[in-house]
Image 1 (tube, rainbow, N blue to C red):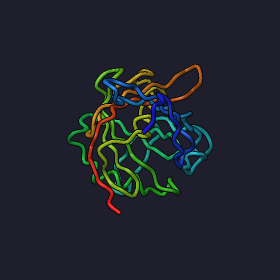
Image 2: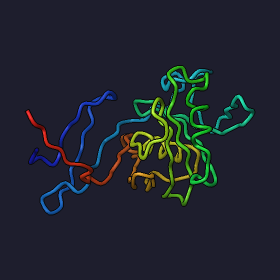
Image 3: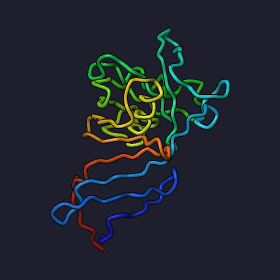
Image 4: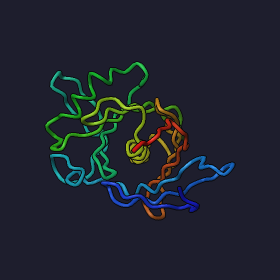
Length: 192
């Protein structure tokens, strides 16, 4: 559809610039400038005193407590670190965090297991949708949260049920970059 190796796409979070990596005359992967993370509680938005939310205790109705870090990438995310994300009850706690009274617009929730300082495994509970196979803004938020909490570096491989993504939170311009594969997932025919 284009011969360009750089395109721009308008999204609800603003215009995103995409670099297309070509292999054998096809787009093999795409690198997206996800922009700057929003870290101020009032802009995420989240109730409470102004400032950043890093390793803050969140108490749920059933008495369970989580340490959370909140980041917005144009949409709100709460990151919760767990020991065994594969067996974690995402379907139980995802909706409880999503609908917590501290989040006036609800929130996406990332449950994350640290594999190493440059690799994590992520499961996402997306507000209004439930668990999803992948989430680019969530992977970006997880990278930012990893740096803020001292758990990971600025470059990460984020392993999701839908595939792996590469992320980088650059120091020089504060932008998060996301790289992922470009694969055909379906074909369709439009008939008049």
